[in-house]
Image (cartoon, rainbow, N blue to C red):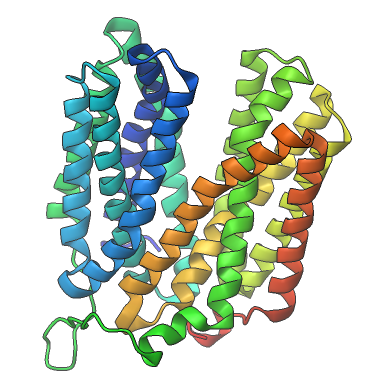
Length: 396
């Protein structure tokens, strides 16, 4: 779990998350400053997600042909350059293009890093390694906004983009000198370079029951995380519970903090007893947290909901990623996890639109009940039909 292969990865995600946290603070504010339109701010965020959706499967295939490190380095370089160039952006369109290209770099980094982690970890410790990776990233995302606020206090908002750009170049340096290549080699010692052809054998992993169910779980987690918690909860808390911005920020921060502390124990359960022992209860608790939102709009109920959500998020998100790594075929791992990352990005793009549409044209409470039902159904299907991977050496 703590080795010469994994420690540089944790450190790189900490630095990456710090820059990202600072950028997340500045991005919507700067976009709104350039073009006084809330709609165009959401368009900027959506198209950044689309860039990741398109780039993830391509990155996965390229890592199988050319290795994991080149894509790590290129991804960090792209994001570093676009971050620094954003400092000089003078129009919304310039900033939009830079953020779209930056989204490609983010996809290349995240996808290749996930594949590398799957390469260097054995199934009996993979859950804890993924948890430590997630904790490192979240720690940076907590530090980043604080650093960004400090920079903003002494400089202008553009300087925060320089902070993110520098952070990405630090991760590039770490990928160059601290992170080793992990792509599997054949018996003759030559790197495997799979041909780009589709046949039953190459498609078989994507038609398996395990893959379909992990996609179901990934979408369900996105509906709650990116849809309800990040999308609807702040508006719901402000409009129906009459909470101020400070109280809403405290609630959201509490959920994130709880998930950090739960992630590693969840990884231990996943490694010790099986992935479903962490994933299924996590999905059930996510369903409970969504249902709690439909029962009341007072601060106490929101506090209970956020606490349950934090525990559930810490259990489910990392375990779904671990499960996807487990079922990835060794000789096609990059392509497989790249396609899975496509569905993960699609969930992050579709979920806010889906729950936002239901809340707009139906009701908040009805939306929360529908999401709870979907999460509960996903948990039931995974419990009954998903093969356990922990006891099979990470293979189905």
